[in-house]
Image 1 (tube, rainbow, N blue to C red):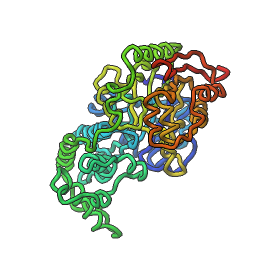
Image 2 (image 1 turned 45 degrees about the horizontal axis):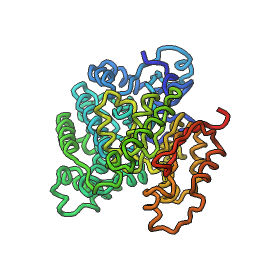
Image 3 (image 1 turned 120 degrees about the vertical axis):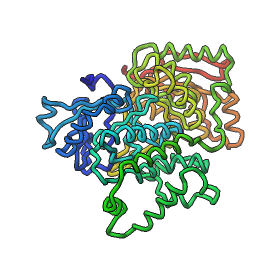
Image 4 (image 1 turned 30 degrees about the vertical axis):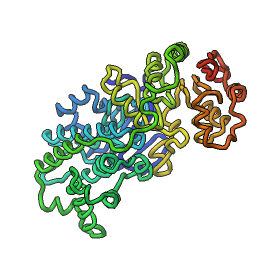
Length: 483
């Protein structure tokens, strides 16, 4: 049996397609609806989806992946109010809750690559059992910390003789092409995925490729051939799928295609130059004793209680995320530098506590907005789960000076989260601030410690503070007024 959903901080599981009914907390398609009730993630399923579930739940590969944590734990509810109020669905499933929903445009290269490999591995496990994944959306994968988890259970269907892998194109557009874009062209795929909810089309990627790129692994078969095929059938009543189905299809062809894709994806490495903050854990401006004092302050502040969810904003490579994780069920570690987050992810996924810290690439001056149909398919950052504790260390000067966001606005945004706060102020005397101001007109007259403390005092009680770096910086632990 699954543990009660209320034991974990919950965000709703995401569907792989746009919902036909955009009710709050409800996502629906022909085969089922995902909704949450009394802090439970439930899924009503159709008679067709129930037949697929019965075959899936009896398959050994499914139970093995559930045990390994790579498929979300799921059970069928046989009775109870959730079943009695199932709105005409043939059955109701209950899913394990995901602590914090994230999206592919917030993942590092390594995360997108590992999510793609998980999808292909599930395909290779399902095919011998006579099943297949009908959808290949990257949104069907979520994260328990640094472990990818497949969440869209009704995507598993019984494979009938002669049927093709209909999710192949979607796999290319949401997994393969973004990985190609960064690996082969050194171009960040995240803005592309954020700007196009269905991914990168073959024609779009092909236009970016040079003659030299044609010989790179997978380009001819999976980009050029795919683009040519789509152009051939564009606007015609008979689509690619129906043509393949009429010709008959060998399951072994699907296996060979998936195995070939897995080999290609496994060999991909991120392109692009080294980022500014990738080595922050070795190049920060603190001397060792001062850095230890900062760590001790954060550890003491976090130790006031056990937190369900904490955010580490501007986490760099996660030093303080791990400190907070000693006192938090889950930590979302966010930074705008993708390579710093990649370092955190690669280190974290090999640790025993890998399911506790979720690394995400997030630019706080331009965080992911609500998107999709009626703005409900992809939710904004705070809508996915507000933290009880937030770290904001060595960040305020970047927000105010680099991003030109008024200090009072940023502190007000933090206060709107309703979170306790550990925040570090970096004064004008600090060399990092002087570097930021060197090539700018100084229009930041309110950027001083007294002004900062006044902003805090509007929303928070300052419980403790400590000067750092000889007074050039100061760190504070605050709680919302009234707590």
